[in-house]
Amino acid sequence: MIEHHNALEGKSHFKGVWVFLEGRKGALRDVSIQLIGEGRRIADRRGVTLTGVLPGYRVEALARHAIGYGLDRVIVVDHPLLEIYRSRPFTKVMATLIHRDKPEIVLYGASKNGRDLGGRLHAVLETGLAADCVKFDLDDEGNLDMIRPSFGGKSLAHILCKQHRPQMASARRNVFLAPSHDPARAGEIVHQTADLSEADLDAKLLEFKEFVREGGQRPDEAEVVVSGGYGLGDPKNFGMLQELADLLGGAVAASRKAVDSGWIPKEFQVGQTGMTVRPKVYFAIGISGAVQHLAGMQESGKIVAINIDPKAAIFEIADYGIVGDLFQIVPELIRQLKELKAPGLPTEILPAAV
Amino acid sequence: MPPGRPLRILVCIKQVPKAQDLQVDPKTQTLKRVGVPSEINPPDANALEFALRMKDRMPAEIVVLSMGPTSFDESLERAVAMGADRAVLLTDRILGGSDTVPTAHALSETIRKIGGYDLILCGEETTDASTGHVGPGIAGHLDIPQITYISDMEIVDGRVRARRTAEDGSEWWETAMPCLLTVNFGCNRPREPTLSGKIRVKRGGVIVHWSCADVGIDPNKVGLKNSPTIVAKVDTVHLPPRARKMFTGEPREAVAQLLHALVEDGVIRP
Ligand SMILES: Cc1cc2nc3c(=O)[nH]c(=O)nc-3n(C[C@H](O)[C@H](O)[C@H](O)COP(=O)(O)OP(=O)(O)OC[C@H]3O[C@@H](n4cnc5c(N)ncnc54)[C@H](O)[C@@H]3O)c2cc1C
Ligand SMILES: Nc1ncnc2c1ncn2[C@@H]1O[C@H](COP(=O)(O)O)[C@@H](O)[C@H]1O
Image 1 (cartoon, helix red, strand yellow):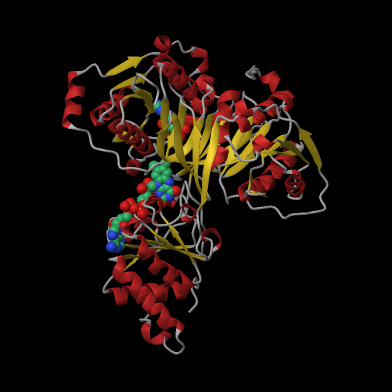
Image 2: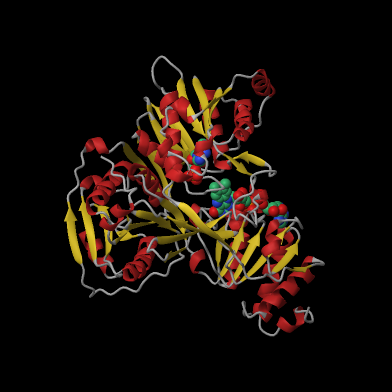
């Protein structure tokens, strides 16, 4: 059943760029939209069409909408068993389509589901899959140059998949700019039936509990991010960070250890397995500065670190640092910011230039 | 639970350089592995702890499985000392340079040879390759259900229920055994090796080494030559230099200096 494409001459049968479109609650995931923009760029350079693949249930309208971001066509696989993402049926659908249509490049968003799908699929197809790419290029022979951070973001690795097709990669969220939407854009919708039965449903979703966001700005959209780590010691102390964030017109975020401790929902997590933020200022408070954390915030404008440990790694990438107890520093910051905001006072509290 | 015999849990662990010691060889642009302290890939330690906690509650046998050089014995010994029953190391020079495709293939062949498994646990991803693709790849090869990114699990009426962390919420999934689960980093605190565990390691016989021939792995399916992807080159990332200015003194003073600097930079406006 599995074809091998080890022979170079076999490669020429593979044409076109595909983007796996991930629907979530009736909308496209933002990373899928961002990928359409990048897929468009690659398809244009290769001089081929850009296809979106959308497995789901009652997703025709979503497919039409997706075209507006720059697709030439969308393959819609509409089936009640595809209503929510599940590893086995989605792998089956994608593998069948890829075997039949032979795209040259298939791109996925590096979401949890994207990795779950890509990981299973690439093994079944026996082709390469580069994870978490942040940049794409083409080499002299027209191979996709899949560029991803390695060693905790200390370097960028160029991954090539020369002998196998399709070339597959997942892309990190929020690295590629979302293209603008043109509702008038023309594109084709191709309907595909899926040969699925209950036997393909090997897992059942019993319950979904949505993380609740208590108002506030999204960290990945804020100009100021106040991020708390395990040093906060207790979930209630995020209240103090929220107050600081409010004074600065910013958003609260967190390290993974704070998230894993159950202090704050997952969607506030910054880092390699969370989100990437690039605010004007990033406050790292009680965060040690592990490589996986840095991966999500090292492109911030200014980085401010507050940590009791003078040897904490976070100070190495900070513009400004204060060694001290956050329970003293943060309240003081809040107090002085309030004073700054009160008219007439600023010059009195600011010392001479340092 | 499967009737009449203990649950057999396989835990796939990889040995990785310690996170804080990640060093890139400036000449080869690859990860320095020799002379650098290593550890069990942290999410794999969580996966092992997960298995050990199941074994605390019900009859179970834990087999730890790894593919790599014989230096990986260090981690396998630790795993047994923590409470795993035995370990298998797939070790063969022809495996060198394998990417996720041959790795998933070789591990699933080894799992077939071990046989009789009910649960396969992997970590969510490794700290050195960080793809998270090997676990789902194994499940794909073995054609068994997979539930990724889990942090909690129970067995109800012989079926697995696991809590998966998605970006926007947590999901409870149910599936049949055998199945493969990938375990979230940080979902538990891995225990320390015990004295009796260390003694078991000392006595020997808890770790077996298998070659590709022992398992029956086709040499044309593994290794660098049979890996679809290659690392063509590695660029060093030049991050913008940071001022690394430290404000000292009493909190009042240090904070005033910090705010002053941020106002000067124009990043906050009072
Ligand atoms: C596969 C994998 C993926 C990961 N992904 C991510 C990710 O996406 N994001 C992420 O953040 N991490 C991630 N991690 C985890 C990462 O390795 C670190 O464990 C984590 O970032 C540590 O969080 P922390 O800095 O809050 O906690 P710690 O490392 O425990 O640091 C707490 C800090 O608080 C300081 N502190 C304590 N008390 C005070 C006080 N009173 N005042 C001031 N300072 C104080 C301490 O000095 C210390 O530096 C990942 C790990 C793995 C293995
Ligand atoms: N060489 C290996 N030996 C054993 N298990 C591995 C190996 N490589 C990867 N794994 C397993 O697969 C998971 C994901 O790895 P990766 O795809 O490299 O991020 C790890 O957490 C391990 O459980």
